[in-house]
Amino acid sequence: MKLLPGFAVAAVLAASPAFAHHGWSGQEEKLTTMTGTVVQSVSLAGPHGAMKIKVGNQVWDITLAPPARTSRAGLTEGKIPVGATVTVRGNRTTEPGHHEMKTIFVKHGSDEYHVYPDRE
Amino acid sequence: MSAALFFTWLEGSVLGQFTRSLGVWSYGTINLVHIIGIALLFGSILLLDLRLLGAWRKVPLAALSGPTTFMARIGFALAVSSGIPMLSVNATDYIGNPFLLVKFPAIALALVNVWLVHRSQAWRAHRVRDLMPRENRRLAIGASLSLTFWLTAITGGRMLGYW
Image 1: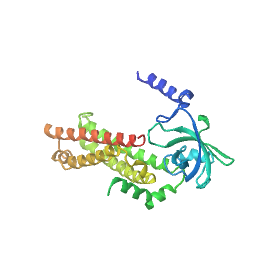
Image 2: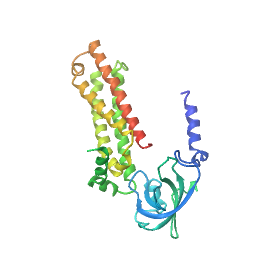
Image 3: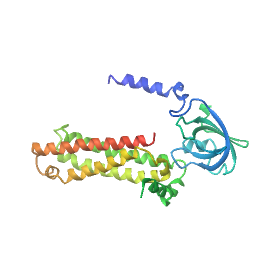
């Protein structure tokens, strides 16, 4: 029982907005904006939504929010066709040799999808 | 067949295509079944193993072994039947993940241990009579190995997603 107050403090800290606004572990703190061409359209099947875009000669893995959250943001499968130009903003992975970005915002033409509005 | 080829095949299989088509809550729901399976499996195993290691001696072993092994089997069946479709969704993402080499060998060792315990003289005898110290020691060793292997499997499985 002595441990309970400690757990309570930890739980409150973990749930506080200050913690929520920190980046993802393994990702850069700063936000990066990139524009590229969709080479694999949005999939909402896995643990999180995902798409692939080509920026210059580099294909990037665009990791979105969990499927239901991505869908609630309006970004459903088939919304953005392969070949479309999109602008994405998010935190890139810090892992050398990997090209992946945890993405908080996607813009396609005049459509904007804010999948993590609290992180913008 | 190499693991990479197997995972590529699994992801492209009818099972993978079907599971991916089930909608935005499907992965979370299958994951839920997997967790319930693991909870049943490990919860039951933990009770039995601690009893075999000397806890709750007032509870007759024969009264505990039936219900715990029954629930552990159900938990294992749930974990496997949800784990395979869950893996099929994005199997290729796991190619090269070192925790695969923790999780699956640990499960294999745990199952070999179950098999060895269940065919031991001590296990067969516990249902019909009190065990001798030597037999209790045999089952306590099995219980230690069981906890080690299953905890390793769960750890490997959880860390797979964070690699």
